[in-house]
Amino acid sequence: MKLATWNVNSLTVRLPQVLDWLTANPVDVLALQELKMTDDKFPAQAFQQAGYSAQCFGQKTYNGVALLSRTPAVNVVKNIPGFADEMARVISAEVAGVRVIGGYFPNGQEPGSDKFEYKMSWLKGLRDWVRTELVKHPKLVLMGDFNITFDDADVWDPIGLKDTIHCTEEERYQLRALIALGLHDAFRLLPQAAKSYSWWDYRDFGFRRNHGLRIDHILVSDALKPLVTGCAIDKTPRKNERPSDHAPVVLELESL
DNA sequence: ATGCCTCAGCTCCTGAGA
Image (cartoon, rainbow, N blue to C red; front, side):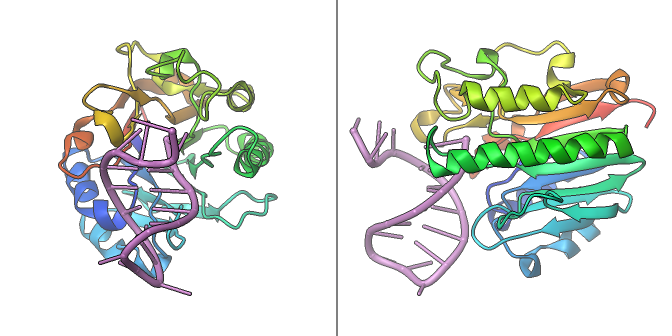
């Protein structure tokens, strides 16, 4: 079984690339973030023709998430039960016996800002919910754009970017607290090239100079950990003429 | 330096992203 996550930064702009990518990478599940469109604009038919059923949770201008799957998704839940949120950031469902959660975590803008406080409370809300989900669904994958780096290995310039957004101790504490529920960073379960990132700034030739951050993650539960056979960042779409600033991350699970 | 890109929108500038 293969699962992937990709922040597309506008599905309107990126739809042709997503369809091309699915043709080249026929994953079983694809979580999308930053659709930046309402549900009535969601191209369900295009995905259907590509062999995917789709669940979407959109919003005008910002945010918006979706789950595509080869087999139909059941028990779909939108956003975090128990955490009131104006924004469309989470979609979860059961696919082939695995509880899949796709999330677009808040950016946070700047430590100390209102948006940072929102990010902190959102992370706490997510953690409280995922804790109960893990009891109900031992086979669980939490993936998406986390907007948090785990440590300096995820940052192109750890000194220059120390304590800036995505790299603060408060954010990393929240990420470790999620891990402590019984989750694992699938990417680090396997050997990886140094300076592996999932996002690069559009400005200043960020991608060409590999000035990036690893902020898109796939976390797997204890029960799934022994089944992880691969986890990789696919930089190919970032080389497109008009790319998303994020690259897809792909997880491979055996005997599922 | 608060811009450098990119995207959406009450669109020819502004807010937000990361």
